[in-house]
Length: 197
Image 1 (cartoon, rainbow, N blue to C red):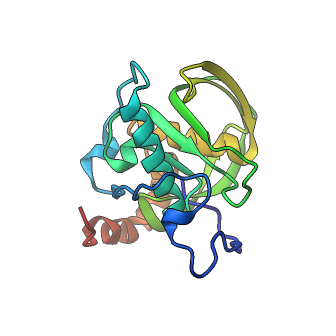
Image 2 (tube, rainbow, N blue to C red):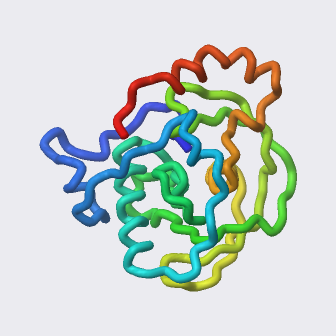
């Protein structure tokens, strides 16, 4: 999910490159997949075991998230059909540890809220989306431990947005048909844009 529009603090000094961001290994960002790419409509497969390959993917996805100024990223958005997502709703806070969730599943929901959402895979397009306000999620963390998270507000919204990606659902699927029609021209431009593979 892309970050809500707001003034961004500078996370790096002018002379600091992406490889020098604290907390990150030296790896390069992955290529994002964009609206129109068939992989975004596929359902991801459960992760059977967290191996070195999954941890490398996690590190590369985290680098990609920070390089694109996002706050959430699902593996399908980088062309990997594994049920894995990362969330960092406050990347400027060094004390906040990003969430790495393998095989996330929503156990319960409560309330309802409407807020504007964007998506790294659908750049420059935003729309109001109705979602549950509070959720309880079970998942496996990067230590292969089963965890349960109670989330509300922005965190709950981002987790739901990224789980949707793992199920082949985009945020534009959650808006009315009329609103989607109004966004049709913008969606066609995104789909036809010449982007690196």
